[in-house]
Length: 292
Image 1 (cartoon, rainbow, N blue to C red):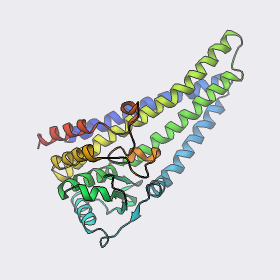
Image 2: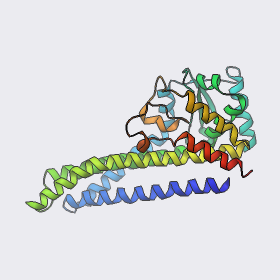
Image 3: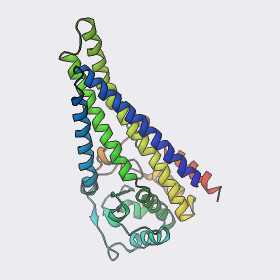
Image 4: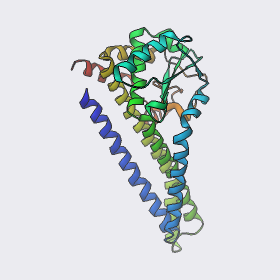
């Protein structure tokens, strides 16, 4: 169990470090093409950091509003409240705010910068589909996101993705409107700028998806450790795979928050999916169960 959690954390940081190296390389190239005007790179990096900071403080409220969730109390949703309360007592985690989305698609997500400011949102379709054992596994997964500070990591990656997009666009502009040198050199820079502007956002999206997939594996492992019942979450994931459907108010920007992909799959779903394949998640959970 602890080995699985440590491995996922380690893989997440490897991806983040690689992403930061890529970001720095593009930034240095942009400054060089601007005629060694390194203030351009510094300005864009500071802007990206400021934008990420803004999202850090307001992204949780934006996600709840975009999902159409409404707050519920113990009286409104006693089953929901009871299961979350029991998990919080077991782990010593503060009781999060609870929200419900009126949607037949079974799904759930957690958000919040810290455990003290967290919330868990579930759809009505999830209540109807899951047994208490399965629902406990799903809620343990969402509580795992809270306890592991996954939202904070996601926002860091979001800021890096924004910075990569801005810097790639800057490289293209400097290449097109007069980079260093002339003649053949300008043609090379123009071609490189075009390639960078196309490839960098795609690569950033792929890294963002990879980060999210690692956090999903980690939350699965955390849920299994909390409930001591990995088969409960495995059964819930099996149902999500069989009966899952797109949400009525699905939003691409918050797709990585849900326990199951809330969007319709596209042609490149495997590369840019923010969720690992459900079959892989179930297999890992059953391997963990064998170690208990």
